[in-house]
Length: 85
Image (cartoon, rainbow, N blue to C red; front, top):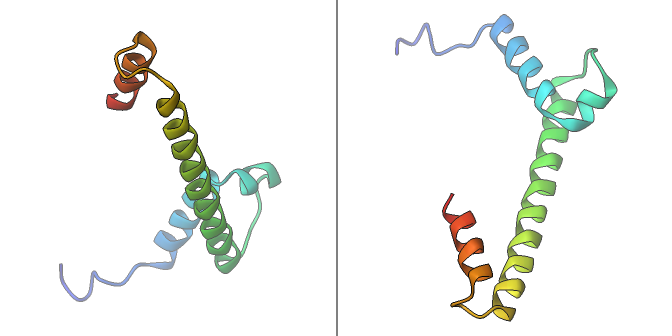
């Protein structure tokens, strides 16, 4: 990539901000409108932290569930097959 192309145009930045805004539940609820890039990035970081906590919680719950199951049971096999998907 040339050094000239390494800079992102303002139009490309605005397009990326718009795409990011469409992915965040908080900004989708708010509806269309301009949000500062800094605010959008802050909301993105908060959303990623929330998702990470949810993944950790689900992992803990799944581990607890698996501990209560017989490893050879049909239920355990179903869970394992879901995890492989």
